[in-house]
Length: 358
Image (cartoon, rainbow, N blue to C red):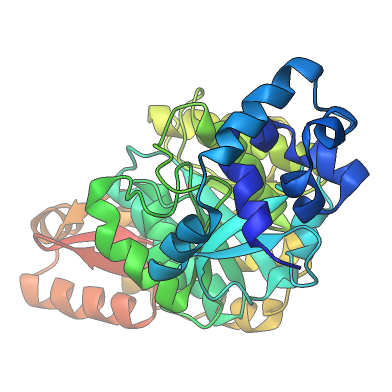
């Protein structure tokens, strides 16, 4: 199958919008691309008044030049008729007929989980997302997200610390870096997984592209985890798609006074699964690694360590605040904090501030 013709269909807006309809009945992209006026007029889904536009645009496209342009920047093409098309994505109501990707798309789809959330994530939320992704990836789970600021970026970074790999789904084309500060992250994701888009090159990150992108994020996975989201966050659109697609929806609870907890709490009230650690996700989705995770979560700690852990809780606390409020010396606090870090229960942030992560 010559994928040049699939690329050609994507380059003509009229055909791109109807690509699933016309290929369902016609299947051969080459036959559609090479069809004359009479042939085009007989294809289901193409109106008579659209035939002239298709022919005009097709005559202005140098297909070989466009194909080489994609190859030169390392973009590959996958169609729904290919054997290696992601099986879970194929199941959804409106799967993308054509996917563009960079990197290695041969990942563990049967153990894929999406982690998404607010672009305006708190430090606490970012750490939680990164830790969840890291722990899942260490169990061989592929982490999928949207390469956005905040929670998405943290999820990708965490996933790259493990063995599961990560998939970044874009709301623009693969040659457009959005947001601009994620240029380095783009490259790292391609080394540890793949970047995916249904949009041909030069497509800008238009706002209406992102809901469509979100259906792919959930469609690639067995379930979606929401970490921090306002009530109007796009992450909740991803959760809605997940429910429509028969996927599981999980959410991480947060501080009730934080507006970024509104989204997860809304989902939890509606029946989403509560997530406190990666073991909960593995449990809900029936994935591997549950027993190992339970061993980690049952680590023993002393009464003094528990006291410090309870005080730090889920908000950043400075070491001076810890020593003052718990009435312990600086040296004792340093020892207890170091032990809790080694046990993987807290994490140190900049400025000698600590956050509970388990």
